[in-house]
Length: 435
Image 1: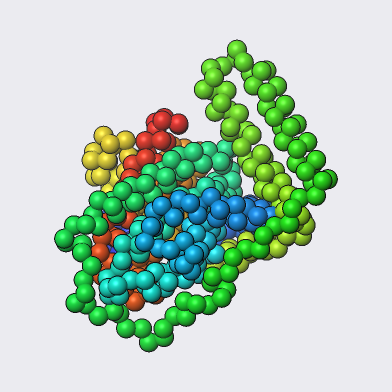
Image 2: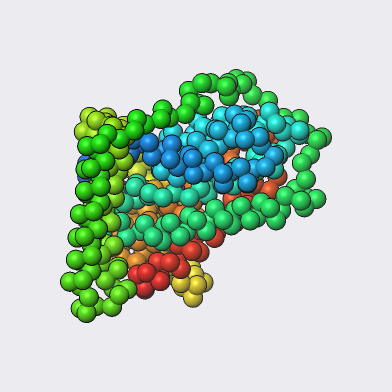
């Protein structure tokens, strides 16, 4: 589907420019878009290296295991048909814990393992079981606590408050997950979505080995913190608490409580978050600098991986904007979306997000570059990107890997979650930033 979308953008840009006499502008936009994409990635590498390094420290310090323990009782209630000690439960917990922490690459093998194990429990192999549909709904809309990728992009584009999208993103992703879960329970007993036993499972020329040990491996438990580490952690947290009290006391009387809270969050969140990740590593006896270097090296791999996607998407949108076609589309749609509080300029982001992670990432970058990362539209684009996952990719990958032909109500539950996430992202951005 993304092939058709990208080709359509390119064709529309050139044809529209041919009629409006803007071929020179489209030509220059194509060359400038390609250069800007590479420049952006170069600027992004440093910020990504910092965040990936810090996250690796916290991961090895036991943060992933802590999230895993927190999710275990919740998933036990959501999936009563899956035995607590079954391999499917362990794989689902690790998959969702990885997603919560923004470790998407680590989440995929656990997700494949979970679908394989759930298929072993499935009485109708050609149709997804209730547990499989619910897992897909949660996975495709999973709550993300740390939208580090969006924060990194905003920082690289010169945002004065790159972490500003954290609250609207958290609200939106929570809404999308809650809605998807609610739709699953609402639709699962409907006759239209009943499991079908008259279908044969999908054929696979190369069956996937779901029992691969590396896909089911759990993180090693972190060693207990030393006395010295505990003293450093307690001293740091105590000093920050005292400093916060003094900061609020100095600001009292100069502004409203809400303004003080917002300004304090904007200036304190990112530094305290970084220190928090390091303290988690210190508590787990991690050699923080060496491990951070290992994590930072991943930034180069990520940069190389996203360059082709960014170049092609940014060139297509730059050409479309230079031709005047995008402005015409926005003018036509704005009377419909404007009264709902949703700017038409953000519509491409909302349309592409369920289809393609790389495509929506490129659109988000282009929106921020055009309107500014701290503009309302730029902030909304970042919140939309973090509000949900790439629905069609998740469904295609996981259902195909488990060789399930009938996904039942999984698509409706996931798309309903997407819409809820977009709506809450828009409402929370209006609430926090106004427009």
